[in-house]
Image (tube, rainbow, N blue to C red):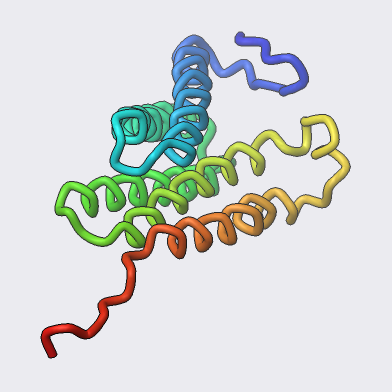
Length: 169
């Protein structure tokens, strides 16, 4: 069994333990890479590289989540839903950039992926974390979006193209 201080983990066998190890590594990678991508100059080398690592982290997170959800079904079906949302959002955000479409749509999808990833973490682990343990259960579902949504909206507004001057009409 993997022992993560402060977080109870079920003794579900070596397959679960291996999936959990991959899951923790992928989660940390995704959170850090997502943060670097958010803070780096858009379109620059750091942003692109961190974005690719974020994509890989979310894909690995989803794969390891599937293994753990199957082992602990049906108690963890809500985590499967959040993982599906994170995976779909990161793939849609990546697809949007690959097609050269709107920065705002790309930012919205990637923001949703990040928020869904953090929501799953807090829903599953929040009741066992210092300070978070004092919060009501509903807050683990709401707080990541309540914090992430305004930041995402701000980022979309900040990176929106300048209005056209109307020349050529």
